[in-house]
Image 1 (tube, rainbow, N blue to C red):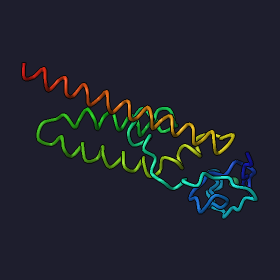
Image 2 (tube, rainbow, N blue to C red; image 1 turned 180 degrees about the vertical axis):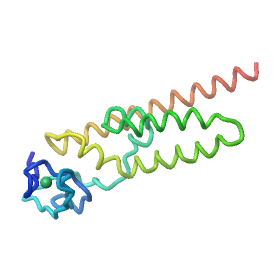
Image 3 (cartoon, helix red, strand yellow; image 1 turned 90 degrees about the horizontal axis):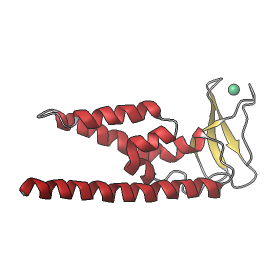
Length: 153
Ligand SMILES: [Zn+2]
């Protein structure tokens, strides 16, 4: 797949904002400059700006696999602190805010994290994360129900 390189330093440009399947505002991390780039062929998935449910559902685990280790660690800590009595809800709100933010920026994060061979490969990876996320939530919900049931025994 075609890579956009910085006209200044030749390093790989990262997507700052996707404007369509062929157009994006791209940023050079090295020079900290942004460029409007138009590709000749379809380069970005049509749903680039849509919500990434895999990122939202898998949270910290998704972060660890997609180059957002610090955010992942932060999510784990917030998750632990959300169990604190009385003030726990503050951590829970922060936790959910970060998850929503991850969902919104998820596609951009994954896209920039590595070089994708094709739009298909990118889509397949996101579908896998979504499937994993759904299973993960069902299992989580099961454990919650089992715990609730066990409490009543
Ligand atoms: Zn540059």
